[in-house]
Image 1 (cartoon, rainbow, N blue to C red):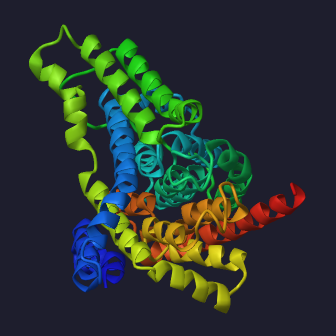
Image 2: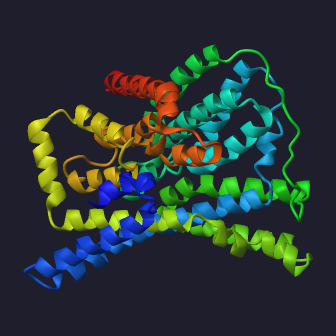
Image 3: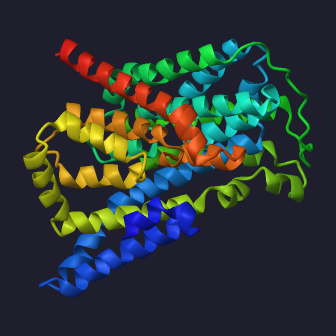
Length: 416
């Protein structure tokens, strides 16, 4: 029932975070009320909470770093370098920027940044919607090959199912194919030049110097790129690396703005960035991960894995199905469920299944506009209609998804 309410968030007009929290608590409540050993549920909940908290702290730290970069206009370093007006060239420029930027930041933030840019360089609504579709596909494909680019890949990385180096090597080429095939088709659909308009947005109350902008941007991006290195060297959880990066940025921004008045310093501080992060999404992940933990603790997921293996059997088809299901049901619960269904004893770290799951869950959501955080963000910003997306972009995303999956399987056999 909770999954259904999450999938129907927009028709029901009930935030999925609220549904997820209720679902998570009720699952554990039912377990506690009907368990033979009344102490076991509380003990198992405490065990699972450590892993859940690790994911949440990682997301909070990464979101705060990105908000801090945005507050200092750091992303202008990228957007001001786009000068061409040729629509076909813009397809490739926008596509590649999105693809690689989402691997460093995340697909949601990258989508918001690029949609804001499109409003300036593609004023014509019809073309801009096509570019918005391209951004969704590129952002999801780019996030899938990086351990910090997509929530589901981060979950697999923190859970020990994949390593940072292995996921990059194994999935960057399939993810690139997933983006390139739709991008090529879209590039054939657009013609002529775009008439770039001057930015009409109101100026911010407080502006940043170029030195401040560059410092915060490069320190922020460097902090995020440092996380996989930190985990590899120390073997500590990734959230420790993110928290270290956030702490360093906090000190640097406090020093940069120490001479400014209280009002200006407040707008550019970590305190302000913490208030702006997407807290409902954090609570949504908390509810979902608690729900999955309850299903895992009660043995439901193990039974489901056995049933799927008996009925379908082929692990490639199972993984492809999970990817397509993520276009309807959020990919976070699906990946969390897969982590509970299949243990590391069955599929050890770096196994084909986990890396293929990272690709499928990360890119399959592009097939429907409600299937990913990037799609939902673009839908809200550009008022994209569900059925328009399905007609114009959904089939492109599906072709790219299947082409990338084919590339992944082919690459796996060639590298054996």
